[in-house]
Length: 331
Image (tube, rainbow, N blue to C red; front, side, top):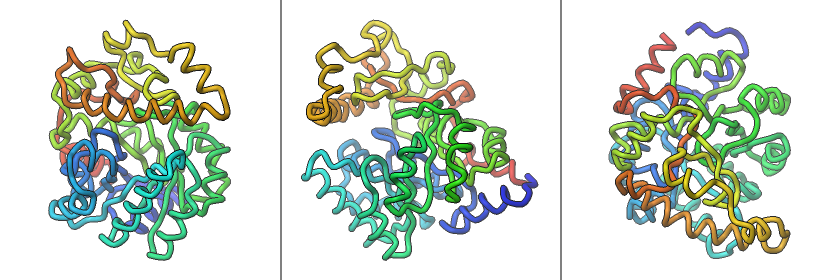
């Protein structure tokens, strides 16, 4: 693919800065980011990103041991995702421990979400690393940049999991004046979509749903099949998982139970003092629910996170096969 001027510079600079061959991040997914999947994305030329709770709680690794296991599968760069909300001091202490261990193990790329990333950025920059922050709009992007991050993961309205409300085009137009590298996250499963985003001016893309439908992902085969069967009209938002909209496949369970939280939960979520407690309750419950749904057969699955990229996913492939399709786009 022949790119011109600033477009070429943006994607090439991003790849050079973090030492990868393709401007593709494998999004950190709870509960689907198993170590083998993370390693495979990096080994194939992208950047696999570790989701610490997925690594430890879902897949049963002590965090440092999990990082070393991934390192045994690939010598190429990996990243670590840190959800830095501070509603619990105990959880924040765990985040800081994961950060320190990651740096000790040679990780230099971090993706933060929620909260103020300043303490992460300061420590990572002291170790010659970079921090990118998930942002769904200009307000949160500005807060992240005030916290010292190096770039933004622009989560659009086609993303799986916690989706944004703006299109990829809108987000780019709203954030490009900050002069930081922008990564497009949401709705991509085809090399032509990567080209379109780079042509627009994004420095790269982040994919999650596409990698669930890979042979290296250890999610239940029924979860993968649900992705293959779905089209984008079947991706709906529910606030029953975390108190904020999450993109899931509209299964029979979702149709029956609905997507909106009940009256009491909505009341709790509106209160400035009660909101954080309700979200904490939702988060603790969803950790268990999503882990169970990932491992069970379709009849027993409830919440299957996925983005609107399902419309372009038609078969289970290895990560290397998926990435090779994108690599050919650059030839």
